[in-house]
Image (cartoon, rainbow, N blue to C red):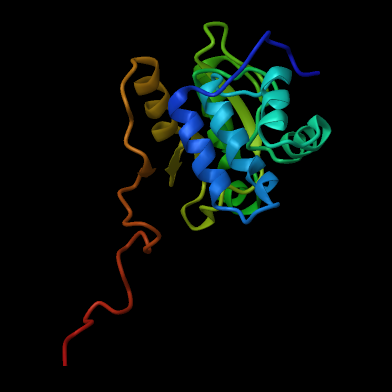
Length: 196
């Protein structure tokens, strides 16, 4: 069940963004902007969508509330209940699982004393297990809010959590200093590119 707040409306800054998203679609197809508008509203609303937000988006796009609800309930990127300040999304699909996602889950649960789907009592952290985050080559991976942390092990995961607990910003990306998706031992091909 979605919790209800009395009222929601876009901030003036987000209203400009929303109108820009809508303008990308041809006449008569503006309802196709429902996904970016939901995401924009979710970010403004503390990381989740309640009934007031869904109804506002429906009115904004002149569509039925049930159609907006269908989109919001289909995609895991939308949260229909409050989440912590740091929403940890742990990938549990095959590549991450093979590379140690279970130990990452253990590290999170041990460090924060929460389980999947729970939020810490102080409201700082929520743990959600999700399907593929699209960084399989750098598995295991978690997404915390909009940042990806890759090539994790128990130690690096706990360090990231400690930094967040201290209100510091951990470095996102590979935790093994890998350059994008290159092999951990460095490039193997095209290393002499440009030489004759």
